[in-house]
Length: 146
View (cartoon, rainbow, N blue to C red):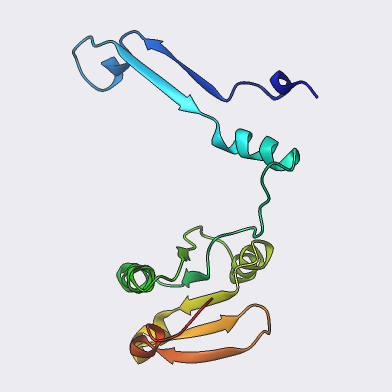
């Protein structure tokens, strides 16, 4: 295998007047990029590292509401309690959102819709067993997800 066969991992350069798109001043700029995805793919392919999980998330929050303040607050509280939490923000059907969690092997999904907001609960689904239950906002911070 030739290491150079997968392209550059790091590159950079000088960009004359790149900022003129954002300001009237003529300013030179420099930049770099590091292709971490490309690098980790190759390290994994060579068995120099091993990805044990497809995702580091313990919980995927699926908001079914326009106002994201409660889902974001819940995610922040979970993260502050050491729970690796992700919020699904793409506008897809619920089935696609569950498929995303399943594909990445995220073990728990929290669903927050309008009904849940009114009752101050969330629906918690264990993606491994399929069990689903309602949990109050207060109780969610006491659960262990890993």
